[in-house]
Length: 483
Image (cartoon, rainbow, N blue to C red; front, top):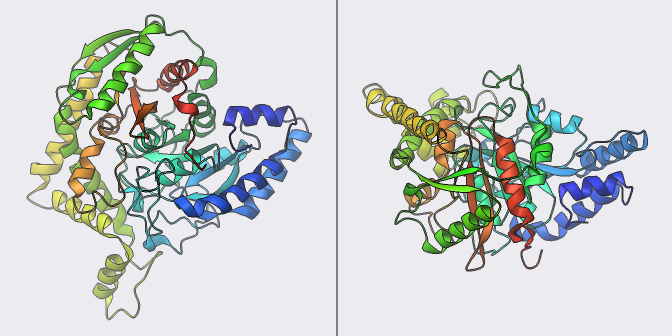
């Protein structure tokens, strides 16, 4: 049962080939057996999962149906879950149990999903390797000596290892798409505002967006259907109708205009990945797509702009974790200043501290105009580049990452080298666009992803292209050895 996709599980449950409880017990046993190898979970919720599975079976017995009714998933551990630890991968929140469910959690629960647990992540979603978690690094099921990507590495590794069919994740600068590429999954970052951020503990509020991680575009469509929608509790949520994403999967790609930015194929891209991207382009041409070279001239400025804006917002968002109201508090503080200083110094890891300091500096008097304001102006130029490009093409295609997954610890002493791995993904967050990564092959036995970007609220178009590609390729069906 563990090899089934979400869509196959939905059909199996509808045909009464197995029950949700049987499936849940099978996957919980598999997690207990295999997760110690990859460390993809922070918390397991066996009792909740079995209760939800039994409730889903009862709903089906009473005539209810639904693609997600009885489907097992897990949540990245920054989505608040009532009465269950929500840690953000940090010592700071190790003892925090949220008093409410995030909107994403409540919407999926209402659809009948079964929550198996909370997945490991880079601390406060800050990282590209899932090595900054206070609960230990996550390992890539394709090679246990390599990283799974971050910050949603726990969700990605769990799905890739067939511990569950799909999981929620978040993307601030590529944290859904990059782990998807590194673990041979399909991952979708929706348009900013498409999925509610209420109850999703913030890293950078203008960039964060929740989305699905699964093995296929078809599964991502099912999970996004349950996650998306307007939420009055979230001031950044957009009141835009949610289409039937599954209904658009089978549309023809005949005449679809795909833009390929010339800036993507620079010296920083591994030539073996470039070859796989060109192979993917040829496959889409066979399906009727028309390929056109385009330009995104301000792409070179995206990384420096992002690494000013994101830390600035992080320094503001994380100021609430001060050892007073909730979260970690140091032992025996001498006075209030000592309480603040030691609680934050002991509760936050080095990467989080680094970004808070960078952000506080960028926002400080005398530097705001020189750094933060200038970065926001670059952000607008990046958005304008995309708007101009989408006047000529329907979708933009390129690599998800410049290199395959690196070895654990390889970039720990050089954080800038890790930041540069986000070069292809962060532009979508700066512009608020939807982006998808899908499997496109392997380099030295490690998965490689191809990225698709589309205009605002065109997630259905991305899913359609990915689904058609997956009907004619088998990269997404490959399973890591031992799992």
